[in-house]
Length: 135
Image (cartoon, rainbow, N blue to C red):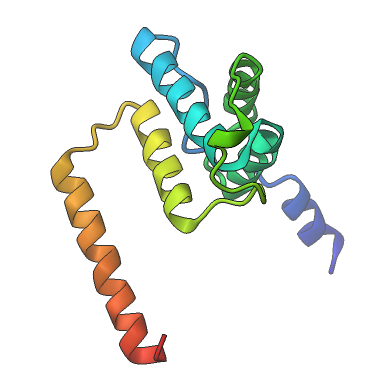
């Protein structure tokens, strides 16, 4: 690898994240807390940072958004009995729900019609995978 290629890789600008910052209006703040509550109930409070880092690596969250969410998460208390997955891992459905939270925090409206279409599309893909791969 030559120097020009290496420097272009190192100096390449990062694409903007889906969510650059948590909006400061009341609705968005409530929505952010509800999302953190959702995540906490799935993986436990100690694993929130790992999940947010995963979303950062996917390009879903910026440093600024993570900073705000981590600040908010310090104020959330979840009983261990309420945690669905003590492994600290989320299912694919949980990640899809997180993506919907992120899109909503960006101000995008998610109608029930869109959700129905998304669910139908997922079912169609699963059926196709089952037929093609014998899953």
